Image (cartoon, rainbow, N blue to C red; front, top):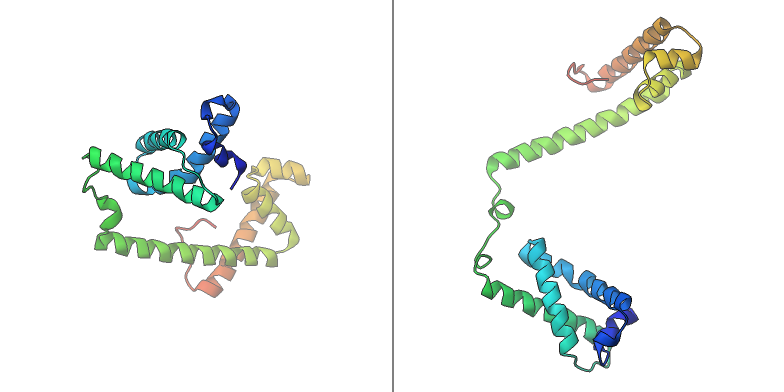
Length: 195
């Protein structure tokens, strides 16, 4: 724990310089924000509770012989302040985030299909990268310029000091080579995918 949090126990917190007070506050904020946000899921309410907890901490200062006990006490104060807030504000009482708890079977099927599709796409992408490595160097360079760098046919032709028609023809041949290799491994040409 840093020495800044120990400044919370200073005899008079108001006598500490403002920039240092701010540093102490933000260190306290970082320490307790996650646990309060986990309970409330409302950023504005969390900030209110952190401020209230901070005021409680600087006004009620017990003595600690161990730094770990101080940190634990700070968390307990913020937890208790959160529980008091929940008791006072009935809008949070018995509130359940239905979206987080309930998952319909349709969503479950859709998400598993989505995962399967993502895995298949990732595998196909890795295969295509492997196929590109097997292409002739002149085809590989064209594909890199066109799809990795997003250059137009004209820009590629200017870079390679050739005609635009030649670039289009070689890119077509490169795509066809990749499609053939893809067909050998995957069995079916997927017309929906843009290779």
